Structure formats: structure tokens, C-alpha cells
Image 1 (spheres, rainbow over the protein chains, first blue to last red):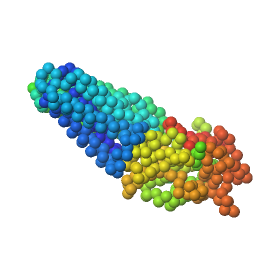
Image 2: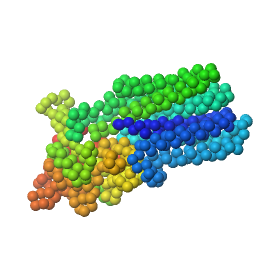
Image 3: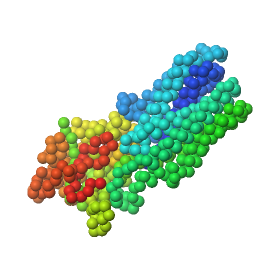
Image 4: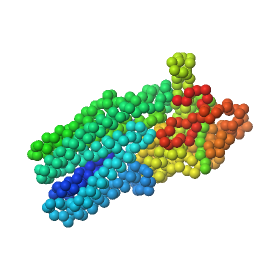
Length: 298
Length: 208
């Protein structure tokens, strides 16, 4: 399937925003982070969400009609739209709580942390669920959810760590976020490998020789080759180099060294975030390439 | 209940492409888009290990299958894609936002973006004709007299095809004209849970 770049960037930034909200919730639950840090996190999450939302609008041919869309609840786009509105409301609530808070032991109460984590978890599911389509076997399975969650977690951890480093948060907070980035990088790499392997096990119906009257010179469809291309084919560079090494393992290495070298936190976290974003784009491009129809002949 | 359906007798389809051309003309389908298209299946061995001339083939005309559980309707955010009372799936162009999720969700690749209008289109079963009691363009124009239109809920008796010498539509149950078939000869496209409504008759061939 042709890559829909606006949707690639929409899901990328949605995962980043939701992931940062989730890890902000983790920090809040542990009583970590200053008022300045949490305020900056909320602002960053809102800006990233807006960038993602703008990106999705570029995909639509009649974006002015999108507000017709709140009533059709089975649609993934509707669910995302509702999820984004809920996220914005939660950001506003957290901002309201923060305004009254004073720097000290705990600037966000525990219920705020729980709320942020819950919304982050739900948004990861909603993001993946939009693309769960039985017509496309590579998307219609648990690996889709696994990957989108992994993407949300590695992006969220790296983004949160970057902001903490930029605002010179407490070393313990920085070390915690570096550790989380390292672990989430491993989770991301494993999720990608599981998905890549699973795709190679999907079987397709076969009509044998075929000839398409609307595209007479086209090669015979070979869906199995398309699904094997990420592991060992034409997409191996994007898959292994882009999604696994750059998109996941750089975060692992950066997080690992970041735990020990707090003074290097800013460049390490920046590298982790930039590479995770690049890897996220690579994997999403691969997702479109393997998203062939289960009846591939049309 | 009504379920407007097209049945194609694949033993009669000669891939003349009249249905494709008539559809283009009747519905002003943009260049590069096809609301109906033909796949030649084969030549394939008649049995395992067979070689020429023990091969067989058939032509498969495919348009929107007007599914009973349509994935395109499920993913549409605005309700533009919807199921009508006669069982067909239609697109309300005034509601379509051009997100193309229905294009992704359709297993048969029969939905297209109209670039000029920024909306998704597909076979309407020639809604403008069938509402007036006429037959869809692909049925009337079928060069092999292979396509039949009717209400599946009323049974085979309801299916009519291209016109005979007197200008009356032929009937699928006309045994003077249609070779007999059994339930085992009636097929549908592979189902991913969408339950396609169109049917294909194929006798003495392996349905692939």
C-alpha cells in the first residue's frame, strides 16, 4: 500500500505526546519533578499533539467536514478524535492543578498521575486500533498493538528525559528517566522483531497464475515476499537499520550511559529522542509496505 | 429485507471488458479508477502436476461486493459510507472527508479516491438506474450475457440479465438459456468477516 505520510507523522506525534503524558504520570506517582518540569511537560505534550493533529488534517481532502465525525463510534478516526479531545481536557485539568501547586514534596497529587497514565495507555490502544483491519493481515493482529505501545513508550521516555535534562531536573529523576529510556528501547526492539517475524508466518490464498486487465504488464502478486521483505528483503534496511538499530538500540545505549553520566544527559536524551522519531517513521513506512490485502489481486 | 446482488456466470464471461467500459460511461468514472475490473485466473493446471493442454482458466469481474457486514462502513468516521435499505453500500459524497480509511479497509481494492472531488467512490450498483427499475450498466452491456441482477432474498427467480431478441431481460432461471448449476457451483470472494453479497457461478472448474 502507498505510504500515507501525513498519517505516519500523525501517529508518530500522537505516540510521542501520549507517551510523554504517560511518563509524566509515572513521575507524578513517584512524587518526582518540579512544578516547572511538569508545566513544561504539559506544554510540550499539547504542542506535539497539535503538530500531530495538523499533520492528520493534511491527509484529509475535506477536513472541514471532520466535525460530522463524532457520531460514528466504530470508526478509528472518531475514536482518535474523541481521545484527542479527552487528552486536551486532561492536560487542562493537570495544568489547573499545577497552577495552585507549590514546589515541594509533590507538585501533582497521585490521582493526577493515575489519570495521566490511564489516558496514555488508552491513547496507545486507540492509535493502534484505528489500523486494525481484517482486510490487511499484517495489521489485523496483536503485533500492531504491541508495536504502537512500544513506540509510545520509547518516544515518551526519551521525550520526558530530554525535557528533564533541559530543565536540569534532579539527578535522580534524570537517572530514572534514562533507565526507563534504556528499558523502553529494549521493549521497542523486541516488539519490532516479534512483528517482523510474525509477518513471515502469515499465509495467503493463491489463485495461481493471474493476469490483470487494468494493469497487464504488472508482475504476479507475491504477498509472502512482501511480508518477508522487512526481515530479509528490500525493506531490510528500513527495518533493521532504521527501526531496530536507529529507532530502538540508540535509545538503549543512550539510556544506559545516561544512567551513569548525568552531565551528558542533554545530548544523550536528544539523540535518543531524534533517533526514536526516525525509527518510528521507518517502522511506519514498513507497516504500509506490508499492509497488503488478504485478497491481493485487486 | 432486500439484498440487491449481482451474480456472474463465469462460464460465460469472455473478458470482453464491456462491463468496464459501460460502467465508466454510465458513472463518469475518472481515468485510472475502475468501479469494476477483470482478473484472468489461470491458466492453471487442472490437477496437481498437470501440464499444457491440461490447464484451465476463467475470468473474474470484480466490483464492490456490497457486503452484509461492510468493513468500509465500520471505519467511516462521518457515516458517508452507509448501507441502504436495498442492501447496497453507498457513499454520501457530501459527508465524505476523503480520509480513505474505507479504501484501506476494503479487502477487494474496489474503492478509489476521486482526486478532483476529494471523495471516495465505488460501484453504486448504478443506483440512478436501479431506482428507476432499470438494470445496472454492467449487466445490460455484458457481451457474454454472464451478469445477472436481482434481490438475493427473493431467490434466483428474481435475477434478470441482458435483453433478448424481443427487448425483454433474460432470466437466470431460463433453462433454455442458462446451463444448470448446483449450490456447489456458486461461490463468493474470500471473506475476511465482511460477508460479500455478490455470487459467482463456476461449473467444471476449480474455484481459486
